[in-house]
Image 1 (cartoon, one colour):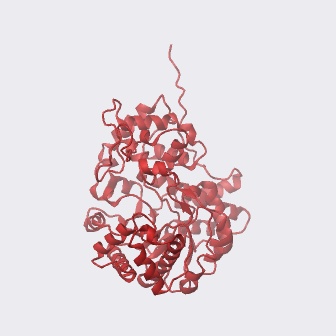
Image 2 (tube, one colour; image 1 turned 45 degrees about the horizontal axis):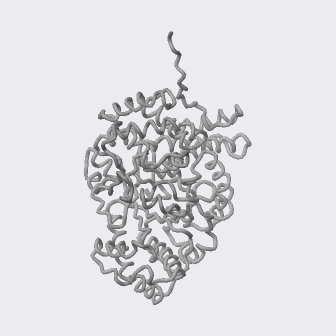
Image 3 (spheres, rainbow, N blue to C red; image 1 turned 90 degrees about the vertical axis):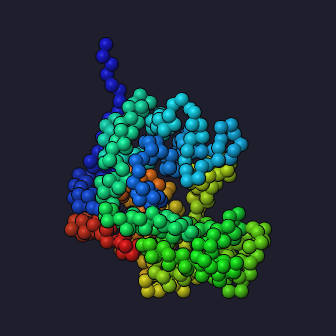
Length: 498
């Protein structure tokens, strides 16, 4: 007897995210059609530049699409899947089969002798848990990605997991699915990476000098570890920055000089922005003598400073960061309000970026007042504010962007980069700051092949919001189309000085 297939079709609807009302849906289609094929401007992400510079074939579907994506890891982990079953190496050395992470390999299976190839096993795990993602933006991105990029026509399941894995693996072995070919196929115009302050940026230099590569990949300066002198790695980071800059960082003035030198190095390699993630947005400056005293005390070890001194030092550093941006023109991105590495045992075993960074309550108006009083109207200074607490969009970020020339409202990020949250963001920000004082969409991803899916989602969500203004006769359809085009191109280029 012939057995009928029970597979669920994978066919993303052409009107997904548009309103049910026929009039609003028709306008959303018109707006979306005007931008759906526009080049991608990605001013904040975490793809490694060497991936594109080396242009080597991807290893396997799982290491490309699952293991590096903390959005995927966290929800699978929440549903009972161990991170070691998702390709993350056990770094602790305390469990059978665990191993130290090899140099240059962020994600590797701990048991290479497992009969089933590790990537295939990871893929099977995703397929078995596919419905755990239902209704989430991760499922939305995955469906678009699997259908549009890899040509799959069935939802992943335990029954088709191996066939889908083989299909994607065969594609990844072809020249059309090498990183540079995909860069062009995705329509990426600009891709910003995130880089340590000591990075040599050799991959960026290779790409810039390569006449066969016509895209643009720019570094972003991220030096979070220097802000917190109570951190266990603070002394090492401070010393390594000094070594990279050739400047003694044994004094606070020396550290500031070294950071200025490294920022210039990044600018010479195409950087237009910095990125900073701190627990809160406090920015009260210290006197030169006080910050020098705390710096010297911290060099003796984390126990050399009190908790209050560490916070004061961090707040002063945020003020100095803005001061540097006024001097050198780098856009200052600020991502406060996240408790990093919330689960210490997971951090010990699997390292950071494994899904257990969690949101905190956001606040900007009062914490940023010292910084904004000094630099909020400084010509050329751009401060892009991001939050994982969307309650502050209408209460703080929108009004701040609606007064201070320097302030821009960053797009919904991380836990709130969802279709519904994008609509709420637009409604909350537009009343105070309209569209020009925003960032454009931020994909914030390490998952290279999800970039076009994420940007397409944002374009659809923005088209739906703009259509809602058209059908209530607040703006014209022509205004909506023109604004949509600006959101995907002119606005991110202007905000990030691209």
